[in-house]
Image (cartoon, rainbow over all chains, first blue to last red; front, side, top):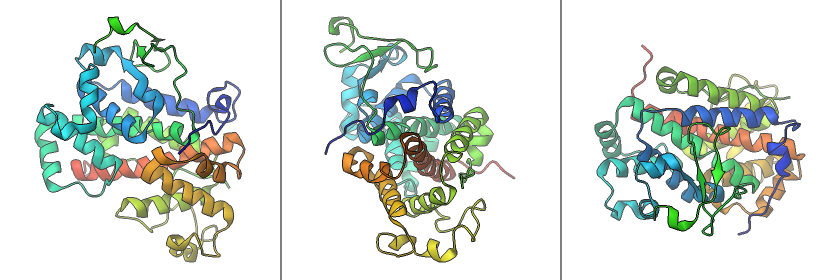
Length: 184
Length: 152
């Protein structure tokens, strides 16, 4: 399987693009979702990681948010997401990741057990935020399909980029940091 | 003909997170304004079937039978061989299936089969409209199961 660039990136990002309105609407949706605050940052980040791994979005897998790092989501936690059922994540986190998998794979086939556990561990507001985060993270699929999901930001020797803000896509700053200064 | 938004925003999202619901609707409108409405409806209907959406097979009120006959909707499961579908529609439906089921394994050839029918801006808008058809319906199905309907 190959994934080259399948569209002129300027069409997606350019100021004079005829589809600028689509791009702006995409970013506005992403920013509105990122600005929500009922769901805790750790759950948000682990769900983002699950979406990125499932969709194989390259840039999403290489981004690290300061807010998530401050919430304790280090490289060790991120590595557990692939095999979360066998991990030491608390049950609430596992339920969030099971809901993520259900929405990504078979959204019509959530088991009664999963629905009961979802309502046990999350409020209605947290559940709707979880669904919206999964939808927002899955805009990754657009970039993957177009082959524009490469990381063009400054990155460290591991290919990781650190983002100073998770609440505003347009105001975020992207930087590489030496591995020795980051959580691992 | 460019399309109108055919994705209903789930009432649970409208009630609990109206700003985010509005932004999602804006994205749907923006993508629909740059995409052929009949093609977008064919894609939405096909995705509904793949996802097991409870209203799969039911046309959107935004696309009438003159533009999209019932017989063509009935033939949608047989689109690869049915003479009711042209090459562009077949390529776009195959692309949408790959996008929905396993975007990570979409190949350059899969994408090229569709992009040859569009210029780059049309291709981007089409892919955004496929995302809306995909996640609009996933969001609707998930919120209906996880949350009660807030409308009386």
